[in-house]
Length: 110
Image (cartoon, helix red, strand yellow):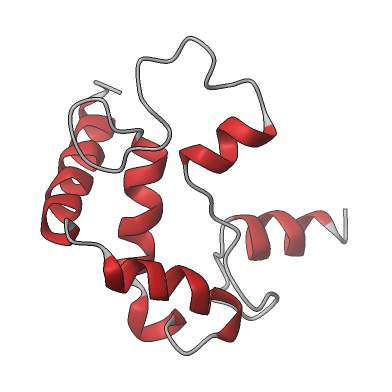
């Protein structure tokens, strides 16, 4: 029990704001697809971040990084992800899609 709290709450949910870990453990659809079979038969494309068939996990992954840039941007452990984020040409569309996805979760539509 003593290890579950820090691991699950601190690292998995980044609920402590980075006190127990150096970066949040978040992933997009491509990682979930590569590491599991949860994506099999899913109508969403784990490689897409925008569009009607974009994977919500992928959309929210990039949105999370975008929203938390001030806190995470200087962290060398996510430098590669931020370099990729800086090259995205569809960032505004991604933000809009993320708001839609979050709204659909809240409405029970996803």
